[in-house]
Length: 305
Image (cartoon, rainbow, N blue to C red; front, side, top):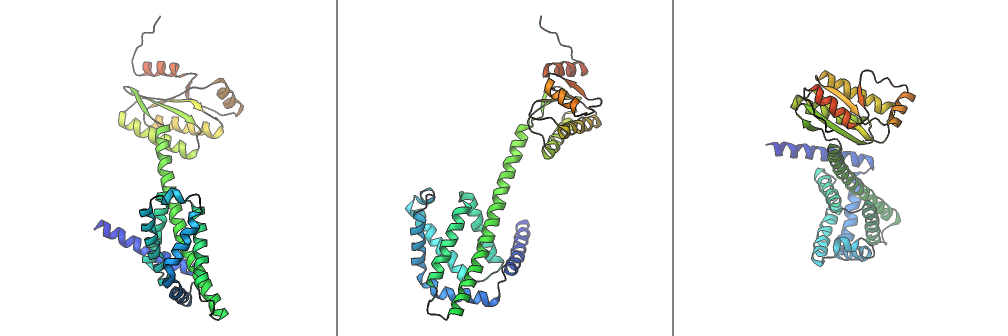
């Protein structure tokens, strides 16, 4: 049932997208009919058109990356013919948008560059235009070429936007994974957490750090969290404010936050900026922060002589 609902939702979105594209590129019923007329000239020659395209493609440096296997090349050429049969059918509907969207997803998955895709579409257009009957009245031929070009814009629009959506989704997932790896909140002792921060802190990262830290505090019922900033590249007003928010939020959770790793340079920067750190507990190094944390939870340490 859920899959059916999702399918209906996608179909509705594709139908709406078809309407938007038709309006965006000012495609009329007459344009669609002209594309079908072009198809009557191109489709009988489609095998030679595909062959000519792959002669051009062989000259591209990317060709061996995707078509080193002759069987795969033959399979893709067959699929290509089907794509253009649909194109010249000129049925700008939800099904058409959905099919072109899947092509964009395939291109993203195999790592095809957008520059090669755009160059390829330009080549296809030239091959199609060359097959349109040159004996047709000038105005009619020009109108047919214009209609085919508009329909080509539709394909490019759908494929590129789908490609970018997929690519952005992958990059976002990778960014989230890196963020989780770069902000590990670790339980180093009963009721003591530690969070080493490395690199730059911006608003999004600060929010992610705080959310991760507060969840860990709630899960472990910790009383102390040590935030080590010795690896933070820059401490400015924005970074200092993010640290202040973190300490206040942890205090609301019944947990004390210690900021460790304040170098002389960072301390001087904070003073120069006139930042009021309030009652934040800070230490110059992680050793001092740990000593305070153990004492706070009632653990006595016997130092080595």
